[in-house]
Length: 318
Picture 1 (cartoon, rainbow, N blue to C red):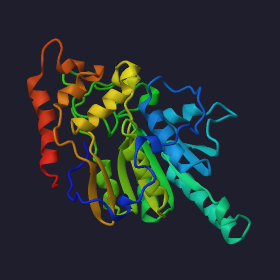
Picture 2: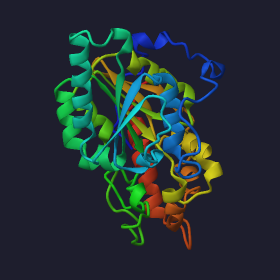
Picture 3: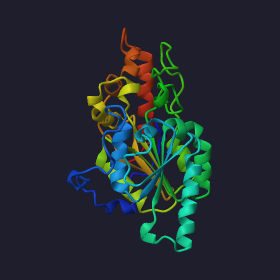
């Protein structure tokens, strides 16, 4: 859960979009297929959709994590450029790339039409933890970049150990107690928004129109732009890959994953679930929460999880 917030009026720019209906979305993907990613990967689902809007004239600076499996030397599935960095270093790598592009532009060795979007691509292990300080520094410097975090709520590439993004009660490789993870998911949206960047948004691949509009908006801006994509993970969350879209939609419908954006000092919710489904509808589909229902219901923990979601939305004004 990310922290509660206020305004519900749409941002002025939100009325101008080429993505008005599902048929307006790109019909073919730029990102090549046949990668080593897990079947049903929600992070890959979101990346496909993000890349289609950003376009091939981009450089992805990819921190160590699940998505580095996209590249099998010397090939990547990207039409444009790709750069690998250590888990904590992607924003620093993006700074070097952006500086190099700006020097080429200044020396007229590159035209404005040849300029590229610099995109940081990380998992939650980097975004919520190991790379948070370098991201903070990049935002403070006003770095012109788009940061995309695919949040599968654990260190998925190394066996789904808990991370700063792991939700309360989830079982992980390192949270195997009777009640699962005893901590709480870090509110990265609020942490980023506190830096007052140009733009911050939450998205999910199961809501492609909302995602496309936010990436379209972010692409048109200059400065630090940060996107958190909830990434349902069949391997780490323990569910059949055919349910990835259903899990994603339930994350929004139950209110567990608020879809919102920050710009100009205001936070706007872009999809408000007025008739929220019970949170347990979302939890039941995932093996990482099986202990809350079997061999007997953990009524206290289920009630706590539901109450935290209810409290969030009680603080959101229409």
